[in-house]
Amino acid sequence: MSEEIRLNSSKLGTKEYWNQFYQLEKNNFESNDEDTGECWFDDSDAEAKMISFIIEKLTDQEFPFQKSDISFLDLGTGNGHLLFQLNEDLQEEYDGEESFNFTGIDYSPDSVEFAEKIAHKKYEDTDFKFQQVDLLKKDDAFFSDAHIGKYDILLDKGTLDAIALNQDPIEEHDGKIGMEVYASQVSKFMHKDSILLITSCNFTETELVRIFNENSDLIVWDKINYPSFQFGGVKGSTVCSIAFILKQ
Ligand SMILES: C[S@@+](CC[C@H](N)C(=O)[O-])C[C@H]1O[C@@H](n2cnc3c(N)ncnc32)[C@H](O)[C@@H]1O
Image (cartoon, rainbow, N blue to C red):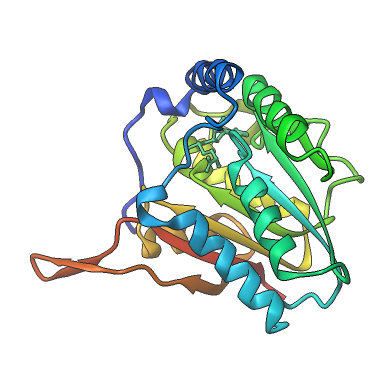
């Protein structure tokens, strides 16, 4: 049997940590509305690369879905930065024929409150939806007909990474841990032509593909290239971004 992929447990794998984190970011924003919080993996330019990837695929009509009203679902949205920036860049690129809608979900109520605050204060003209959802809970109200199979592009920047830092067995998933149930849980929001674009700094490309292949019907569709380094004969990069699609 091949070796299991596991990360060490860390406080970054707990809801308490993220509540405190976004509580602090929210307070900072309240005293200075230019401070919209941390942009994870900024040093690798991950957010900009994810957005360019999406805009290029849309422009070249390469996504498997062919439609002009596109729904985004940001999994573990944090401060919502990825969605806000995506909206700004899409608005610059497209002039109205296409319509985009943005939903961000996160299990931290402080994240949701914070993202809503930013949306209200800075992006009043766009209808961002933020909702508290635990991606690993089968009976979370978000796993309903209104959302199952409804999103064209799912995004994850650092959320599986955080989930994988918690090794507690989950009873409702027969004792499996979060990173083993994540892919099948989130793929419920996809239809047959949706894409899930995920960026990770805790897993290599090979590990990420293995986690998805072993635990869901998701297979690689495309990936983003990052500058790579070579160390001791092993090639690598600090983050990886992979787009998955459902096996047809
Ligand atoms: C590293 S942060 C990334 C936040 C955001 N994607 C970004 O790039 O700024 C990880 C996020 O995952 C969220 N998260 C962790 N476990 C989750 C779960 N089971 N369900 C929903 N969100 C979760 C945390 O609350 C946190 O906002």
